[in-house]
Image 1 (spheres, rainbow, N blue to C red):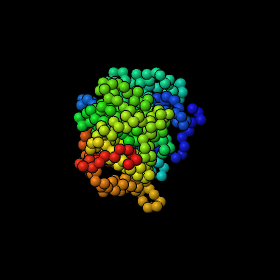
Image 2 (cartoon, rainbow, N blue to C red):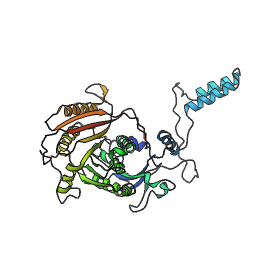
Image 3 (cartoon, helix red, strand yellow):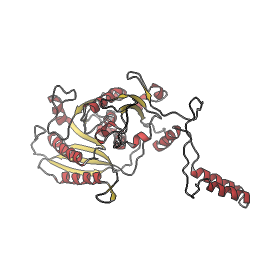
Image 4 (cartoon, rainbow, N blue to C red):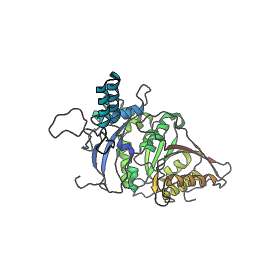
Length: 399
């Protein structure tokens, strides 16, 4: 553990900056030497429960001692002045209140949180947030779940601060947005067969198990798929009451064929491929449009799969626009989102006599059931892949 360090080119999801359970549990190292954490996320499905934004603020406050902010200090100064508006003493106190916020150059000083007490000191005002190494087989979240509805708690193994190629091992806001929509519209997905592309650690598929009958959660990388499979096992309390089944499978967007290698534990059987084509009516994708090459591969794979389906299909995908300054344009732009839009436009123009595509944005007016910040950069799209009557159905993904 002492030798584990994060590289300088790593990325960190904002979800991990607002911990849902006040502390993360470090479980082990995965195959590539990254720490694996186990966190729980509570689903706020009861209308009597608190607003997610208030819940988030309360959890953030519980992480450490609460220091007085600049606004509070200013308010205190104003209160003193209002007690006696004409009092020179109070006016002087107000001025000194403002001066206390400035450094010797006149710049505003940021009030920092109080430091941790020295080792050995008893201080019950702060909840320690350091990771705890746990055994793999223990019920590590039993204490956290005490007094709560276990059916509304999702347990997730994940990593933090990964290289770009391993971002599927993290939890992202786009997954929470799509999960919110599923929780709000469960009747739309009741009894469906669902395919998730780029499912990562499986959060969206696990939420979908509250309504759908069969979910194929797909991605690439044995280590990631193993983590996803463990998460499915951790959340049997969600899948078993509904009789849903989540099948974790390998699906590489840059390959034309499904993996049918019997030596691969995440390969497809011929029966599963046939069932996927015959029964699927919903496809999901959460926060997968961050690399231009992967975006191109995604839409090519989507076109191949939908052309093989027996029925028309609805695709839901969430995306978060991420703005960066680029030297090429000398401006703050969102290149990944621009490429996503242009590639989507090309798909809508595609017409092979068998499929017709239409798209529309989804209004984010549905309730928020998970604690996260629903920022303006988050978007949800609904793409309809409609079979044209009379078109012949291809028999293999390569077609």
